[in-house]
Length: 156
Length: 475
Image (cartoon, rainbow over all chains, first blue to last red; front, side):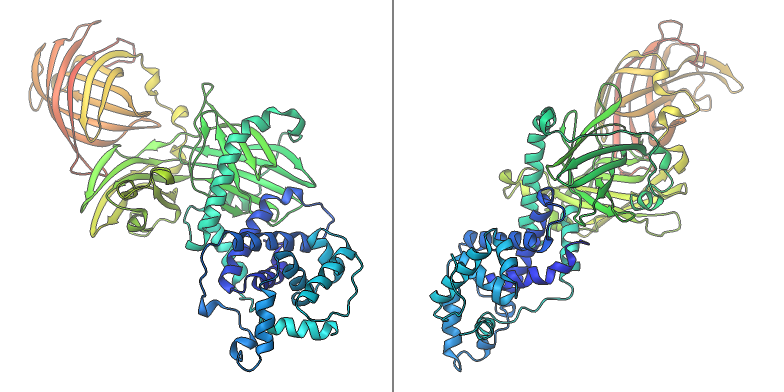
């Protein structure tokens, strides 16, 4: 895994952000790597490997959520959120978390990419396969839906 | 709200992702486990994916290969060299002369995969790949021979950077021309056509042989020495793969040290859709050990269900293997066929209608007159040698009649008859001992001797004939 190994932490972080479970995230990254290998022939040489891999990880996470007909909370595997430790202290964060995970996948994904992985809008656009303007617009709509009053402007 | 504040609040909502330092190694290990046919609970999904890919590839391979428009460009040049590190990773360090060098390249997108060489014997198929540029992803190939998909566990080894060795734990089946014609698909994007010699193996014991481990009924289907590995395949009735476990079989050298195991896999014997409470309790085990360089008597330990069976295996020198066709002595097929009507029942069950007699007739030696008959025959594509004849110490031969004679059943190696599998005394009736129509019958039971199933027996009955040749003796 020479090429992709440096990207595993960010791939894992994306999966955690989308699935909120360490073990599910690990499974998703594994499956995504296999998919990446299967389709490596489609990867264009000279392109950036990072958005290509993140796209596959995001798709795998969406597939896992869609296919999951059960709901299990794995205590030890839940990500360590500050709000988990102080939910009662900060109900606003708990509300925000609930709202975030009720967003449609595409909107949640764009927020995770932009604010949880710290990608530039250009990288977000590459990962989502959309234009830079569309990435900004999608981010704006998602933030608005979360009532976070963004200062970014919708260009789309 | 500015971006910094949004970022802070979203991170608080999502929480910290603690990236485990060992996750990459775990993923690599699990992928390897998956590819070695040892499914990890978390990798079950991947197993299904791999199986699906393999099935689809197997179904699509002939069609894809027939479509020139999407067939990768293939180049062949002679004289390619396979790095020693690659050969060592494939457990073929001393067998480079048995690896067929090739230089088959296929391009898909911007990535080129080259087959540097290949090796095959009845237990394994080894393909040496070079990937450029090196993606770092494991090579997972599906292999078809002329008879269909080779359904087996597999593993991947690393050689020099950029080189990948794909090992399928099954050998290909040769075609009419003696070569295995392989269609190799890599990741559904690269395909290769390979004609490959399959190195012969040497049978080390009577198969099929049946034994018990408590309530488990074990059938040893294959016990052989290939040029690169010692291979044991067993069918276990009454145990699931989990119950059989990974320590079912071990091989100890003459000094009692374990021989390095290169393959250890077990699985159910029916497709997943046919699994039920009965079929789940049927397991096929495939174990392989690196071929020892030394000759001698090794011990095969079979364990399970609270029982332990130890069997002796006489492993011939490494250099002598793989050359059954090229040995110095006469080969079974060097003797003309003769019509036989022999039935073997018990641990080895077969009907012999054609034999290759190598001894037949009466002759006089220092101890008196003897009559001897011996013939090669094949059962389940394995050669055996059956030998019986009068013993002057027991009874002098005095012409056609009925005699109590010693008889033996042997394995067949590069130089002719090899290890004794069964021995006993049989009743020999010589109807005619004159050329060209010597014939007679035989009846008796042989008992396993220094074989993997020491308590096994084979009953022989029926008639025999000879075809006279200059090589035939005595006479």
